[in-house]
Length: 203
Image (tube, rainbow, N blue to C red):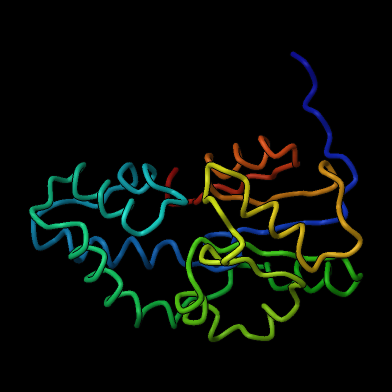
């Protein structure tokens, strides 16, 4: 068996927010299960695994199709967003992540975070952790006007490294921390290094 390749020197780490910085994925699971309970359906780990890193309407389409929910996708999005507005305010940091990010920031390593949600949603999720997110040099949201395409295109990663990070990184000096297989594949396609930290609730 060939030895596992070693990580090359890293100068620019980039973190995906949901599930890596914020312990938030279980909140989505609770809210979607409450909706599914009305139709006696189970929002399982398998269903969740089908749409990691997918936008809201895409998530709704998959849930409705797989679980055969008798409701339009717009209704599911609206109902889930209303429920999430309250619980997202309670989002906690993942264990030990504050210490990790503080250590990187203390030694002046450029830090970036990408978020698969818009500004309003980010404000709710980060409301309790403003100091923590102030340590990041660059925060890229999915509704950034300069981002042309979402995943599976690598625009969200490339935009993060093109904005506000100095000195500019060179491909393999970038290290992406992801929690989803498709996100890890996007990072590799962009010729960047990647560490995958899978959602513990999907295994």
